[in-house]
Length: 271
Image (cartoon, rainbow, N blue to C red; front, side, top):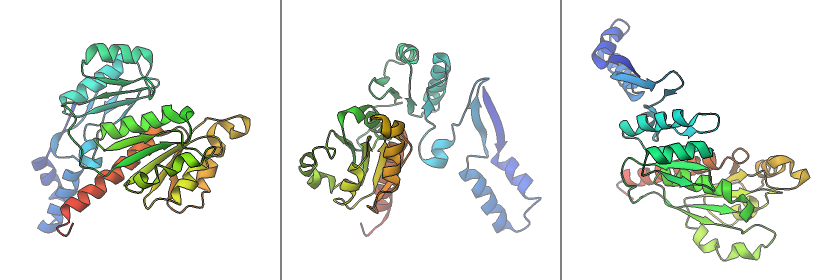
């Protein structure tokens, strides 16, 4: 079900009662237009969801579907509406039931069982011109969270590579990758237990390092709380931290940085 909003002419007519200055009026109309208002349709909703089809215009990327707690039928309905609107889809934390129904409904869907994601593109993904993002894991036990970050970056059409199992239990393993990592636009560092890797990595590279703490570890790791506090108190000044097991959030922020920097460089005539 579509929710019809006012047209631009209707908005302009209403705003004329508030702004007598033509310049102020145009600024107000332009501001509302940037939010997606004035195009006659503000959202697409059903009894169970109110899909934000204007998010791509406002924020650069479409709305992402959090699969947990949703019925398989609702997920299919949301993806169908996104496809009709010409938007690529990403579903995180999917269930087996959701995977079965979505894959049966959309032949081109990409399922990553390790990441627990579903990805659907309107057209074949184009070659990306974004900066390069590395996703680095401390251990192979962190892979599920890292794969969620990778799938997010692929959905965003961001160039990305995965480097696994280079944690501080074997510090020599990281050294061979440092020359490549120094060429990254952003690095997503996924680590559990004491999460020392972001601190070490941050001292080697000239780019932001987004730490993603995982719930991997024994008792005193407290389900990832120790890793998160370690990243938050990291002394390397280029390291920041997102939530525990939040591979999507780490990948999304990295993708925004990579695409934004590339867009700025393309628009700068001196670059």
